[in-house]
Length: 169
Length: 186
Image (cartoon, rainbow over all chains, first blue to last red; front, side, top):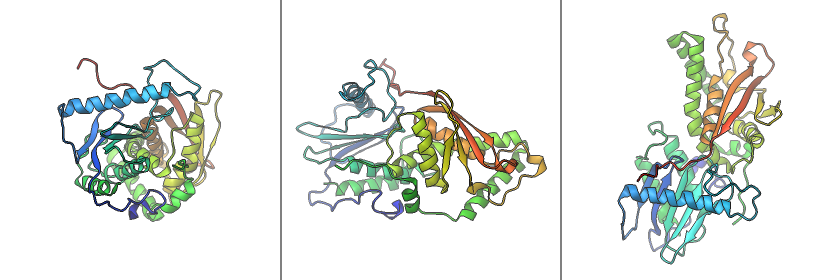
């Protein structure tokens, strides 16, 4: 995409597959737990109301991140479990997979968390998550009408995101 | 997957869209001029510039992280190096250097020899207390706060006041780790 000034900064989306949209849902949270974005393309079952769903997702990731950092066999410093960590510090998990879905996760040092739930045979989505972070920067952060820390209501961002998601294998 | 290599300031700078340097300088000058006319008090103008910088910094950090692929810095020393070498290069096109580390590594000075904001500028006598580039200190403060560092940024040397370089003192007050934001009552 032209505004990134060069294709080596972010990967160009792969060729769209015939099966259509493979992404199921995307969540974006900021460091205070505010759900900035939630979009779904394919979610057959809904068990909780939206608020609880977001809190559950955020809590899950917070705990998983804390746990994976503490269990790191290569890191020197080990505080007690539950001691808050700086975002981006220590190792962080980047995906987990069940037999029905795969959840991919990325957190920036500024606390922006991007979660993508896709079908289970998806490959490594870390580059895609970085690309989505770049989209967030271009369409949302640079938008003067957007207040940081509030839910994203930007039509252009949603459209571009949908288009990109259709191209992810 | 190949490991992600942080990109150097030069390569990112070369890839971004550039705006005309004079347009940038003159726009900034117009902003400062208007603030002085509206607020009249030099201290108020300094505060307002800092606040504007803070608002910019809060958004700038995401752009910086996205374009430079830098992962979290291990300590404040690395942070200061990254700001000087990658950050300033990427956004202003100038390279800064870091000097004067204090004993526990929480305070340092970033030195800028060249500053695009102040081309063509001279401070008149009635504005001697003005920190013309105070927006930069706000930007640093805002950006660092979004990566959990509370800092205090002040100007030590200012070329508009007769010194030979621009020197910003950045002092780390504390690191604020992430806390679980929801209360447990629900």
